[in-house]
Length: 215
Image 1 (tube, rainbow, N blue to C red):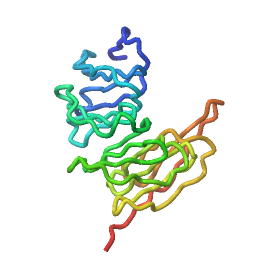
Image 2 (image 1 turned 45 degrees about the horizontal axis):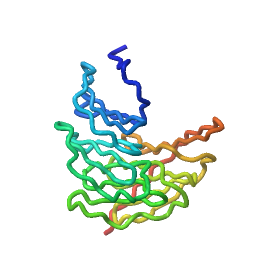
Image 3 (image 1 turned 90 degrees about the vertical axis):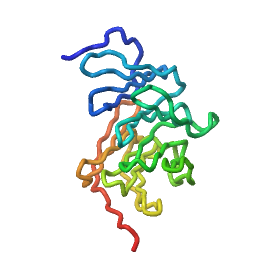
Image 4 (image 1 turned 120 degrees about the horizontal axis):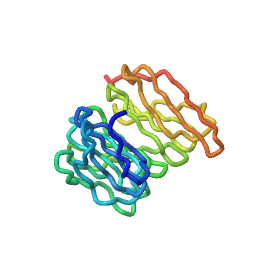
């Protein structure tokens, strides 16, 4: 067993390795985001308490971490712990999930039944992706950056091609709300999982689609 932070009394909602796995980011139930040195267990920095933090994502250059603050999305510099950008408005619906595309161009966040998306090259918010019938709870980009998968409390998975941001499929089969998604590293498989308060859980696997670039 490595280092253990016994004095850390707050529950942890999300965690993420960053800085080539030399550091760990944690988000607590109270909204405190902390960067830890993995080797020593020492705190590098702590962000002021944020409301409604549910998820963390790293930037592809491994120099930043992305998190939500209720319905807003914040980008933080790993070296300084300074928030470099805040996207969205305080009045936006709470966000339960988010992801950054492998090429670093796109940021997406579940916001109610919709998927919001920002072009990080311009900072502009594009039109949302609409299709789910309940709150979006999970988002994952395929490793090749061509497909976005979204899961929802409506028990379905939707697949979106980044070539025009078109819907390219819907996967049905879950009997419970979907809470998480991940693609295999080779991009050949998508895994989805979920559960309910009655103790019923599911893990399903799907062959991942490969949308073709328009001629």
